[in-house]
Length: 375
Image (cartoon, rainbow, N blue to C red; front, side, top):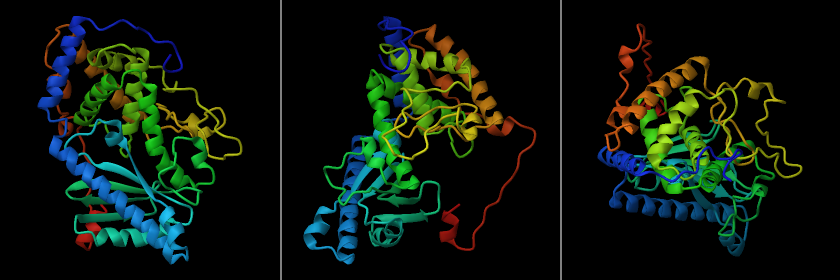
């Protein structure tokens, strides 16, 4: 059984379901939701180059710290992707979230110091914006024309080489909160893929939900809507409830289930665990934490320590999401009643500037072009 409850249905797809799924895939292709082979190779080469640079960075800092060449060479330094790229649902122009995992003698100051200097010396890097004080410290870069968000994680180990296993919860022992949040990017992503019964159907359904949410203006954790992780978790739960369903069926069930969901009942993919003994990372628990009680639309990450991926959602943004769910439910019902019909209407772009009577105009400025990039 996938998930915390038995499935609603294990019926095999009907011919009409397959026909609707084929029409859905055709629409995704026509709307340029898949990267080309050339783009795939560019990303793979780019990640290989970043991995080499991180390894050199760890080696050089280790030598400067007084370590021998042998110890410095074994110190490692690895990268892990997360987000849409690791989930396998990225498209042309998507950014790549990349976590740089370093051993315990490498600190955040090294990452935003020496490593940033190495990046600035790399001709392929055309933009860098460092935000070391962020909730999850990050360097936002553009490398070879690809947007790459570089995050830092320091593990409590002498080496961070090929034998490093970040899937085990013990990797979080002795790490700071910022490193824990960075490490949980790939950890959560991998667990999502392990908790869905059919990865291919999940990916097609998630591509659909992501495109719909972006077109309707409700894809932004910063603005108080579900972000990429939350939409992935929501989609994965429907896949668990309909483990044998075609992608079109998963999408068709997605909207009515969440429109009628008994919020603040949480959406979870697996039982929330307290983690290894004597590990102090906070786990989402509304019975003990008043802040967790305040979450209106909790969608919980499966990897320890479980967190609410939708803590920014407010009463107003939740109302907007539910309104869009209702619209999408009506459209998808009509489409599924006519197998083979295009799904294009689902992806109509919201006309934001016709929705309200009053708007606020915000002007952001900076004294230099470099400073402007931070905006």
